[in-house]
Image (cartoon, rainbow, N blue to C red; front, top):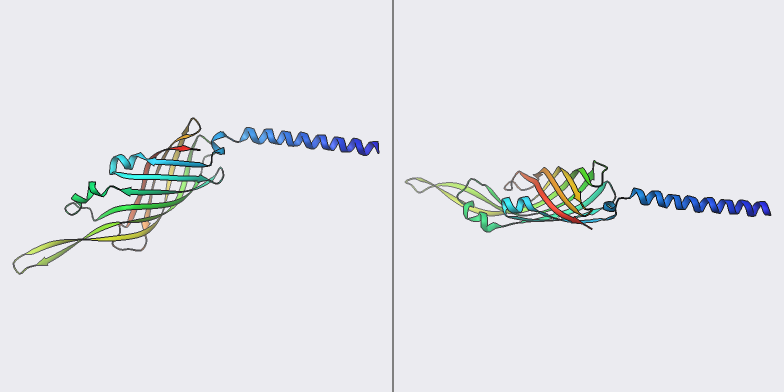
Length: 197
């Protein structure tokens, strides 16, 4: 009976030590950044250069994968006056971009990533029609609405400051699939500033 009590006590001591040791090990490996699962960002590049308001939310599933969504609204007033006279064929009004990202770097504070995305986009396109009034040819410009869905990919880089603030750079391209009047490709380009919590 003494031997059983001794073995039982030894087993419990080893189990308690193993659990304590495991807790210490996992606590030291987990970065404070990785413990934060949510991130919000504003696209400053498109805001300054193109008058676009771009806001993103990203949710981290684990250290390698995250999912998110970007919403982009365009300031139509800044472009609509020139649209009928310039060489631009389409004027994008909005984009809604759900995405999934895979971290290629294992560092928690700076990393490269690959992204696959779907881009729901819509806006206006113009069509030029040449008519003849019996004397001369003239061109009529008509404006129509379009909407389409693009599939694409991008690459990016993230840099964290003080465990919460982030600069997120990404560049990519997608191809519209359904509407022949929509732009054939849509760009995915941004410099985002954000906060992780």
